[in-house]
Length: 521
Ligand code: NAD
Image (cartoon, rainbow, N blue to C red):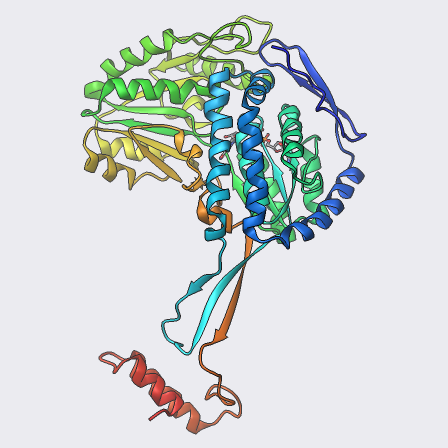
């Protein structure tokens, strides 16, 4: 490994933000955070750059952003290496969960943006002599506040979509992972994207709120439900539109007819990928009692085979935990569960230092009232529970304040779909886990306290624009209308007759009703 940190420049003059390798505890680099004043200046520069950018046709913006796809594809090894260093995950995981999805998302949206953002006709069912359409115009300056668990794929998907939509983007990365954002800015330089159009604003959490208070035009927040509520409050007070992608406690249901090898493989990947620090991790399994023991044996066997460690030193399947506080939460959840009667079948404790590791852990004999089943673990914990019917599995899955993803494993498609339709989750996957975040055409969204909006999908791109409604005449508008002044009893009777012809039971229909209102013979 021979990564250079030359790209760590153009910082502010605020407090130092130290970036660590969570797998070793070594300092990677120190970044100067932005002061409030520097953030304000960045916002002013973004406003100016956005005006020129927004004036370009969508196709031209997409063409320029496509250069980023080419640069990233060319330089993906160094990006994956940096993600491994700053985020503690294995290189393959960095490629398949962070970099590949962004290359593909950029290809998808640069290829389709013109079509997605073109004026959208709204057929008018009654007033046929006029027509309406939606004209998508950029919102202005968009602020992205992002978490540390996927420091590349989460914010950079929003950056790419925001730019294509015609916005300037300010990005306040998580303070544990500023380097990946700064590296992206370097790639954008090479792609020819104006430095003022995408600016990285390193800083502690509250700086994000300060920037919202300064007055941005859109906020894209991804993080915990607790912080999301604070950010949404500010947005609400200032009437700034926003998207909130928040926490999860995702359930996975296995019916007795499921392919148990498939289910076990997906459960282990879904629970321990990124050391469980995935908003859509498999955090609770409800397996039918008829197959519970067989499934548990397969899950335990696969989990025991996982290799944990520093991905720089060896080929491993699970890397480090990024946030030491989250590691404490995970440890506490296991200790409390054991005190309350849970059994640890694999793992259950911190890994050997010097880095921040927690063993992949499978828990049995857990109950719904334990923190490990109720609250987000955001770490490598897998509570496995028995149910005696699909009904019980659905009820217990839905018994949560969260509703991000849910998963169903069954060999019967109609049974799986029947269960899926009754789960309270923004996305339900059948016989697979996690991967829809990498499908740019599908909405990524949370139900209940997992979020209020969607990112990705064609509609997600449109949401980064303001949808102006334009209504125009098809035939020349006469110089009068029955609805204009002067009002009179006579005109009232005419309109009322038209309403009856239109809407009363057994009514004559639209044409007759309109003719009578407008006195057309
Ligand atoms: P966090 O809420 O602590 O921080 C998220 C971001 O908010 C960071 O950039 C942080 O600096 C910033 N922040 C903190 N305090 C702030 C404040 N007062 N005002 C404005 N910004 C502030 O979350 P985290 O620990 O970085 O990430 C883990 C959480 O994110 C988990 O709950 C996880 O489920 C969630 N998450 C959700 C999704 C999703 O798509 N729904 C994806 C990834 C992570």
